[in-house]
Length: 145
Image (cartoon, rainbow, N blue to C red; front, side, top):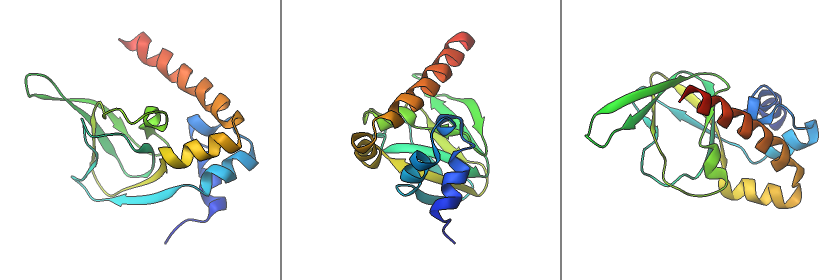
């Protein structure tokens, strides 16, 4: 059963990337969201494929896998509820840098980059708040390297 726009907006408010948006902005984004379900073992996204949008974990667990130059695979992270990935593909369609594999039944919310760009044209302030969170996330990653 598909979630209502209000339910999606309420959930988005708990996601770090969207936490500073107003209720009105959250509702605008929620109207653009698509729901996707995956089974254990499904590739949610695949390394090397073009990015089409942002994915937000609603239910389940997934692992982040990167295939190295020598052909081996390395697990980089685990994702659960409110974690998100693919945020850079909101801005470009560069190839995915890792694969995301469902460990069990997973539900994701998906915001396609084309929908996001249309929202930015209508409401540029959305980008400012989201970019602040992306900068914080980037700094955290860089301190771990």
